Length: 412
Image (cartoon, rainbow, N blue to C red; front, side):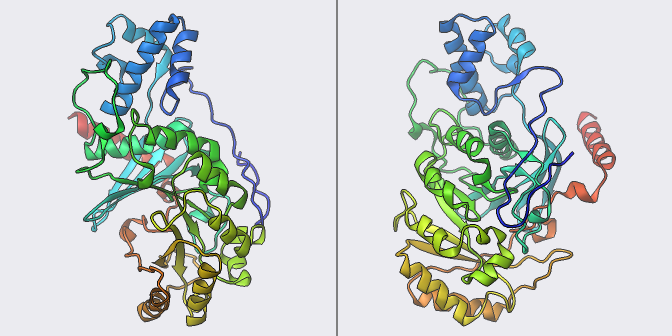
């Protein structure tokens, strides 16, 4: 059953544990190299062989996108069934994949223990951004956000977080290296740049609050950033928080990626209403944590996300107060203005285009970048704040039937 989530003030996540795999095998996806080697040694290999096999398997997973031990051609044929019997390299199951008219893609994914979550890919002229989820559901109850109307079920594991990036690379056909020679040669991160690829950036802005699943998010992103892993630079990764102040410095120290903050209001009264975590960690405390964020500079600015809600947070006075706060805390900042994406039952409306433009102009004139984000993927509910699993609209039996039909069509 779902665990109760206490209150609207400081919703402490109490997700259920991950259900062990029915087949008893251990999933290697998302595990550090040393841990993979240790597991191989525990299963019976000597230390030297365990280390070598670990390095080979790691390379196949993250440079070729292979999830079947039988495809690992430089591992002895007799060794492959041994690995298959004990271990698995799992991807989240793709239940449904949708394409927007603007090129945005949204996937409904399912964990091995049958929980659903989503990820979104947003292509632009000069970049391609994958929006990655960190939890099944969310605890935060932000009133403008459709995802926030879900209950938290559980944290995603490092493998399920990394698995989203793997699935995107599968779909885009973008694995870094086509050859397997040179395993004994030291490789550098420079060999695996994202130049010329569709998938260039990752944002931890999908379902869930990443800083409420800190350890798993950190461990997953370490693999994403590892030069021998998925080799994406930390400058191309942004983590978005609603303001879990005690974890922000730890995030900068231990992960070191760009920071985005869901601000959405400049007064206590309004932010308490629309981002309830503000009742625990107020605006001043949050902005001080931003000022103290390790690595923040004019070259690596903090992004403030600000959803535009009609007659709620969009006045000229609100814009001027936003400028005052940013300057008071001397923040290297930019502001992303996000037109509100309505969803059934939402209590807010989107600000008018004229109001958004006026708000943006005030912030720009103060010397702070305040672009208006173009809504993407609205026709498939993939736009900002709209991620709420499509599985709720269809029964599981219906989704299973659709998946079976797709598989049958592939096999014809």
